[in-house]
Image (cartoon, rainbow, N blue to C red):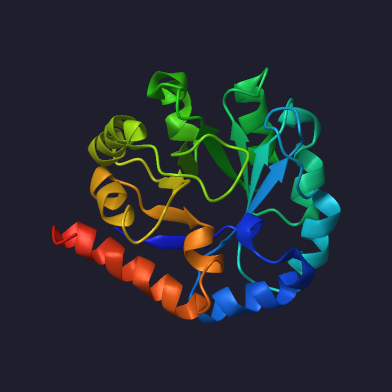
Length: 225
C-alpha cells in the first residue's frame, strides 16, 4: 500500500498560500487538498475557481478539489478548467450522481466521491468501480480542526475490504481529525490517502509534521501503532 499525504489548505495561512505550498512540497506531500464550501451544503464559505487557478501555475503537485457544494454538477467544468486534477463530489449533494461522474471522466480528470459520516457505504457501492478516489469523511464537513469520529471506522473497514477483495484501483481516503494518533488505525482499516490540515499546517515545522504522519502510517501497517 502506498501512503499518500494530502495537506489540506483549509488550515493554511491564506495570506501566504504560495509559501505554504512550498513548505509542504519540501516535506514530500503527494498532492494538495482544496476544500470548496458554499455556505449551503456546509455552513462555511471558502475558495472558488479563481483562487485555485492562481495557485495552479505555482506548483506541480496534483490538486484534489473537494466540492462541498450543492448541485456540484453545475460547476464541474469551472473547477476542471481552474486546474483540478481530481474533482471530488459528495454523494449527498448530487442529483444525478452517475451523470456527474461520467462528466468528469469525459473532461479527462480523476473522479472522486466523498461521503459524510452518517452516509452508509451502500450509497456508493454501486459506483466504486468508476472511482479514482473514495473519500470517507471522518468529521462532519464544513470546518477544520475537528475531533476524529471513531464511529466512521467500521464503514472505512468495509470499504477497505471491498477494495482489497475486488482489487479496485482507487485510493481510499480519509478526511477529518487525521493526526499521528489516528493515522495508525485508519491505515489498518485500509486507507492510503490521508488528508491532514491542522496536523500539518498547525505545526511550526511542516516538513517534520509530514514525516511524522508517514512514520505513524508505517507503524500502523506494521502493527506497531
